[in-house]
Image (tube, rainbow, N blue to C red):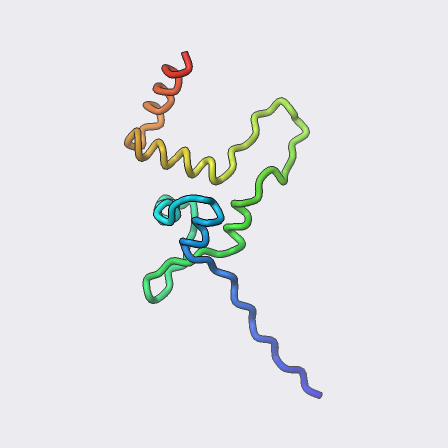
Length: 108
């Protein structure tokens, strides 16, 4: 009996709409995250973007690495970081200092 050669398994890829559903955001936000480097899409010959399932699942995981130091501030999730960068870029023209100044003014 001869063994049949196993075909290499294709990676699971998600469409921008599927990724948007996972993160509960608009598909345009997913495209923006790809442009800013938050996500790393594969561009198909047709020009459509697809996202590796492994990358998306890693971003969806939160709090797996617990620190022993209970007083340390928690590390922001990749989604929170992407949202913050998007807000700074959209509302403050990319000027993080202006965003911080506004937050300090609002908190006082």
